Amino acid sequence: MQNKMKDTYKRLQIPMQELVQLNIKTVQSMSYIKPEEWARLRQPQDIFEKQVSVFIENGHKVLDYLEEATEILEKNLFSATAEIRENAERTMREAKSAMSKKPKTTKRKMN
Image (tube, rainbow, N blue to C red):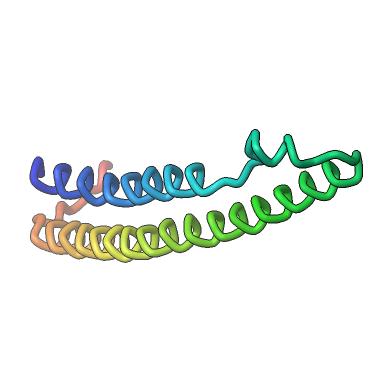
């Protein structure tokens, strides 16, 4: 029983580690306007264009992040679901087997 709990814990840890690594990678890859770029922007429309460009670039990175995070969760949820189903079926078989081995009691009529 305790080994199953350890295995389950390890199995739950893997997607969390993958998500943390993905979070770090995504945050580190986010774009921003660097100080030297600010110095080169003279017109308000240049500033606006640069901000929109950075916004769009980061938007694409967020979409990529969501896709990868969903893949990580799907991969691990499908394997966990299969394991849960197998455990439930095994428990049902064991319960049926135990019930069939149990001696049947007869009810006495009370007069």
